[in-house]
Image 1 (cartoon, rainbow, N blue to C red):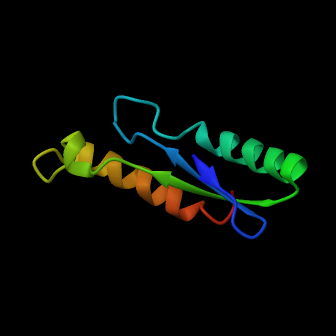
Image 2 (cartoon, rainbow, N blue to C red):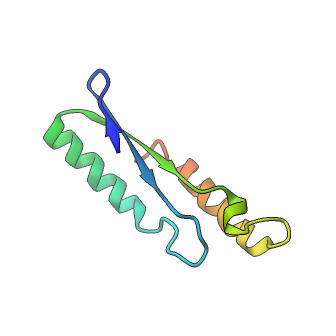
Length: 85
């Protein structure tokens, strides 16, 4: 889903941080390819926002430290790479 205000394309991308799934490891390539495609076809800059489920929904709590660590790693990794994608 997305919209285009003032020449900027803003899109939202649902990302699951469930430790049982591949949590965003391939999303870096996806983001770069999508950004390049939008720039080439739409002649516009892309702002991509990840939407993730709450940690508690994945049972990523203090009672499940491995799940919580995995969840936090996913969020922190996306935050660290937000400006480069």
